[in-house]
Length: 188
Image (cartoon, rainbow, N blue to C red; front, side):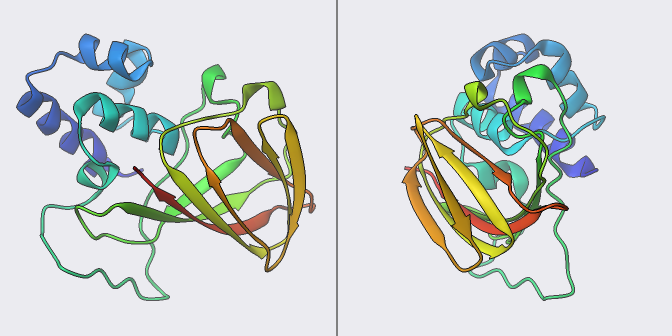
């Protein structure tokens, strides 16, 4: 659990002079969900994080990063950055099989890179997710069934896909035990 997100979000809410109820409404989440995030009971999924940041008019990196301004960000192979995707609600059915690990701490960035473990858990493809930006995915290990709009494609180790994330999409691993991908989200 990353306790930094809740306290940083409280500060950003105060700076924006926005109520909890207003932010919940603008982010299309319940007040209870937002309170759980603010009180460090759970971390938001990346999609909820994006919606919260859009409602606040900030970049995702502004919420997820620390306050030290650095021109570069180096993360060593033995370091891990917390970016849990543990928010479990019915409106998160499209990402319940994904667990995220942030890959950078650089503030004020335009790209958000993540190492994502994709489980082989069954998905409801009627609950595809869309959000602003573009994404690039590289399959590190395993095999992914990627759903994009009304089409699907199989991606194997070494394959890449680049797409407009406004088109509804989701994915699942076709390998028992899951697959691993590197994903970069660019907000326009």
